Image: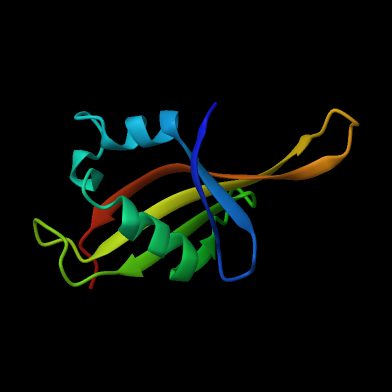
Length: 107
């Protein structure tokens, strides 16, 4: 799948977003409010707080507050999976990607 962009988080992990995942995120049945906020998503990955999922140690939730989100929303949330893949030489390499992203009102 084509990679749309990559960002480093504040731990220097490379995280990527594919075109397929972006289309999924902004689909009318999912989170169309994200369509104009791709740069905010990048900033959320780069500078947001990160919390590990208690049930899935490979899943992380990135959160960042923004002042100008629509519909009373205050934060962008990104869900990232940290995985490994094998190179053609059977060496493990990081494969960290955004699964979804959305806006939310948080206190």
